[in-house]
Image (tube, rainbow, N blue to C red):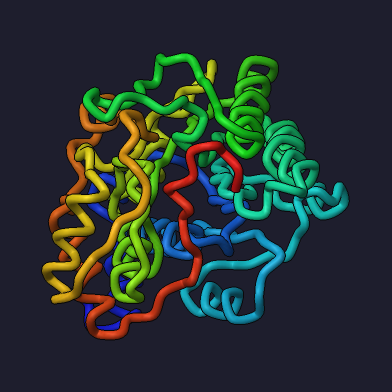
Length: 339
């Protein structure tokens, strides 16, 4: 259990021995594009700590974003260099340092409906510009399981070889992001790894947090998207950094999430029992959901260290004690792709 955000941040950014080994094997500095998002700060800090543990404190971790002042100061205090840049602005992109390693986290989801051109610019044009600018680097880029269609809740989820069937313009633009990095990988020989991530959870945000907050607020829980996958963000961070070992040309890709298929009704009922609160439901369970198969990731890296059961326990404890949340709901129940 975590008694404070400092303890939580410490756990989220603690590198595994395997992460240390991966970054030890790779030469040079790491550029983290889009570092100010939900996952960026703990990923950058994990990399910084891994370099230090590998006996390579001279190697730089450089975080790039437009930044709020608080996030930038926190990163700097943790030994991460920061650069303010708008990746759509050619002069900003041109002045970024060349680094052998690039972690691409930039993107846009919420607010896409009604402002689709901005979403396409952020999710497709920016990756095209970045992929060309850093064509001589090794790139790990964050994608999403939304590029797949919905699959049967009775199955094991989408596998990496399934054809993409994105629903809605957000998911379509995310496939566009992948295509831009795949194009660069084919055209320039750039080593690329694409991470199709489904629902990381760090106790301050995530599907489990959404469900728990609805129960605590006395709001009905929508069971239309009847099932989901989720993964502890600390485990996702470690897998993302270890993917530098697998970046290749043609581009390589992998699903990253927890192996369990969790059912919304069951999870909500268990959380309500632990909270000592009633739970109310709305909607009808659909036979399909956004689910990913993680056999490839588990064959490479083993199962996540934190199980779904443990993650549920942590979320309930965090919220019972009044732990802060990021107020960034996942909208996981959306089935028509309109975010």
